[in-house]
Length: 263
Image (cartoon, rainbow, N blue to C red; front, side):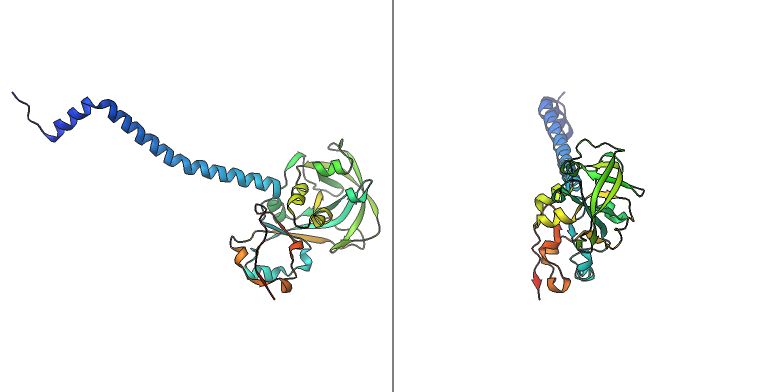
């Protein structure tokens, strides 16, 4: 008796005789689905890894504004050039051991700045009490303190900050070393337009929050902030903002600011 041919019997027969080809086809579809899902995930992880590496080297902020008390930050917020809620790095002195040119600015981070600046600790902790200090590794070498260990006493010759500069008189201050930090200032020096500004004004030694300059001094500040992706298109008066390129340290993948200025 002849079997009645139907679409189902034809399909089953075709599947039976071409099983290997269909298995390969299904396997290829599954692989394609895995690949299509895996590539975006891989790219996302790669971007996250690059961003984390940049943050560890430069900080999470997009830009650092030196001599912030001199700059019209309100204008930068209103124009959209900077996003609000910045953090501030408070500069209280400049300190050295043997040679002033091998010294560093000394300062502290407010709570928001600590989040943005994202300092990495090699050993120990950040200062919490008066008389404590944490210093970047490369700065310890520059100060001739390459053998310094946590708990050691460190004496710096210091001159107090005076807004955008430093006073002439020098005082000795003694600290307990409580933290050794990964390098940050040396990374900024490599990318800054004005390296001298970074060398003289950006701290690589940090004391307890709230520490004040010595008598007669007045702290300087560095603003740490995010800015929008279209910041290069924003128009504002640089003269009115009292801002120029020497004030800026760009840390958003080391891009140079191309913001148009007027006035």
